Length: 495
Ligand SMILES: NC(=O)C1=CN([C@@H]2O[C@H](COP(=O)(O)OP(=O)(O)OC[C@H]3O[C@@H](n4cnc5c(N)ncnc54)[C@H](O)[C@@H]3O)[C@@H](O)[C@H]2O)[C@@H](O)CC1
Ligand SMILES: [K+]
Image (spheres, rainbow, N blue to C red):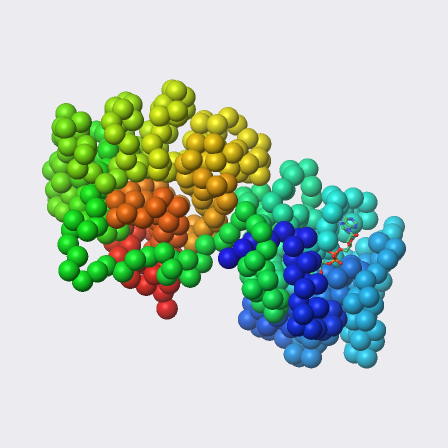
């Protein structure tokens, strides 16, 4: 699914208005209806007192239409503020302002410098500024947004919280309204996936306002959101007459005395993700545990690595490796194979940058933020970090899996796939080790690295999402791996 810029959204609006065709005020009505349909289940009590704060642009126009529609749905404690801090208004705002005169809804207008009354409503709908935001909030706008943020009511933003830029750059210095819910039109905005948006968003919902989807999907963009359709398209069914040889041999080089669990988790993840064979290069101290936990996995002693290297289809290295990280240097000297480099192996790359010149193709690196910055230098924002990731992935022809709440998968052509799955119940040790096992397993099964990364990240998240949906407040990594076959079986969707 394409993630588009605010300018492209405007273009898709224009295109839909011209070609459907639909009057722009009717498109606004459709957007307001979609908002209301999403709003009602979130705040079903029609006695809820609601303040709707509207600017005089199209976002404000939406707010006025929403006021009228909510009132028609029986919400009768609605107050509207119209904030006339700009000296112009949009036509569709004007039209919706006129339509409100035939309703019992009370409107109060505010001008620059006006004193702002106390707010005692339970819900505040933010229709002040939307994707038209083009500069930081200052003056009266800033004062108003701070006033709203200072009251206890739940805030629900129309399209985008006022003050949050839509396109990914979220300067620390810029103030924004804090929305408990954002109900966004047609597409989530790129910014929603950046960690800095936490200052403005608790959760977001996306509603279809009927813009021309095929047009949106043809717009050029470097950012895509992974959906279940991608998984259904990419995943290849296991074939009749296939055998373990069909699904490749994954080698995991992982584990040390104190961190053997990391090796066990990534080996288990490889088995459960479908590699035909999985071998573990672990210290002998881990053998009893390996055979007990994952009897499917074979043992590859360190000293045999060079000799049997040719038998593996993909190699994952790093989880829990500790001082054994030097094995990476040896591996990079053998014949090139699809590789996943994670954890301590990434730390070694950061210490010995010359190794970066020896990375095989294909190669997937899976840094979290700290590992990434160790590797490529510190970054003060996620936008800058992502820019570096795109430059590095292109220059080195590698896939960078930049792990986060919304993992960014940066492809060798510089495009970015955003993974939406996963949840806070999964925030615990071992999750990254599981991902490395899954990635290596899919590479061993013959998936190109781009596809392996999309499959592994998405299914890793849906496995965790399903366990959380089953009521697990905490999802340990060992539990997650056993869910992987079901996540694959359901192609990343559970009913
Ligand atoms: N046909 C359309 O274009 C549709 C637009 N929709 C709504 O329209 C919104 C975008 O509307 P607009 O482009 O009118 O813009 P907004 O309503 O977001 O903002 C209004 C104007 O405020 C000014 N402004 C921006 N940042 C400011 C700041 N920091 N301080 C003071 N003034 C500032 C700009 O000149 C901007 O045009 C979307 O977020 C969405 O809510 C929806 O109604 C769906 C259809
Ligand atoms: K808004």
